Length: 111
Length: 362
Image (tube, rainbow over all chains, first blue to last red):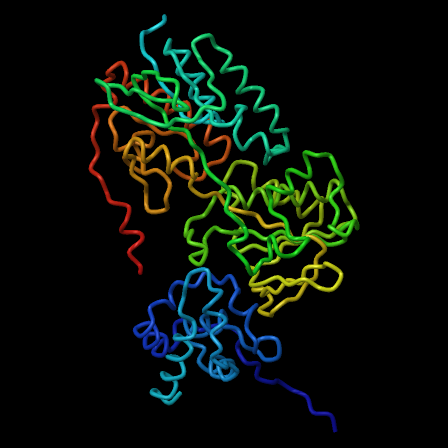
């Protein structure tokens, strides 16, 4: 028998009103550089992990700001802390230290 | 209405030429001092101009018509080697053997182009087929076909925006202002010469601030099929055929992107001129935080320096388009005249807001 009826679609919208910015605030306090990103993508282009995995520092930085912690947790696991992103960043952002603090924040808040 | 006033203009590029023209119109004698053997500065090395695609030589001709005035003394292959305050004016020494007196000095020393070898990861000077926007203009001016070093017609050409601009690693945090639209202009010119070549512009932001710039950008999309990819080049490497492999993030797709091009063009920024440093030391002129001369005020006293009787015009104070430079040169001529004839307009004061607060981030 063919089943039919309504399904529940997950909302694609970023609910910025409900966004949990706790982790962002934690990271921004430890490494204020997080606010300097101009989203040029040089970090991702040079990232050794990005070729194979969904790993983009640029996106991680946005997930953090938008409170999308689930996406963030998934992506950040691929980071190998090689620091190439820090070398190429035109704004001189300490990207490595940001990822380091995100991981610490995730542990601390048990996300 | 000749006056007995004399002004030395240091630098015979666009700003120097146009300022000399407008000073001479007020009956002021002008020494137009240029270190090269020709007037025209960087404009001599640029074929066509954005956004109209007019030939740069037409603008040079217009400027040359101005400096033909009898009271403009053009001094070529001339370098200022010493300057000494004398009364209200300056005794100046040129090439160690010529002395002259000027009631005021207008500094129009322009800019230098960013040295692309400093962005080693882009391979300029290392890989055969990486050139700068200035090199591309030279090829255009030579009338020769744009070819790879191996002698092939390029099938794909990449242009990289912001090379040496907006880049703390390169030591220049500011936007060079002219490269965005130059990149669009050059992409169109490539397509006009080689319709079957694919052209890709890699950008962070396309700053189409000037009148008609946005129209040029739209033309590039609509009529020339130029592809704009939002992402800054992280590195380039050479393949076995002399192709250039680009690594960039397509930030709008959110994925890393690899592309091999036959020629890579680096849109190099404008930096403070070496000549500005030398002239600045002779007069004790202050530089701003980005190394260009510091004007007395950001909004109002834009042609005045920290030294009495010394003024600025053109790209020696910040990157400027040709249009901006010509306008600034005429404003400077007016400011110098106000100084020489004691106009009340120069007595006005404005509270100084230190602009350095902008740069306190680190």
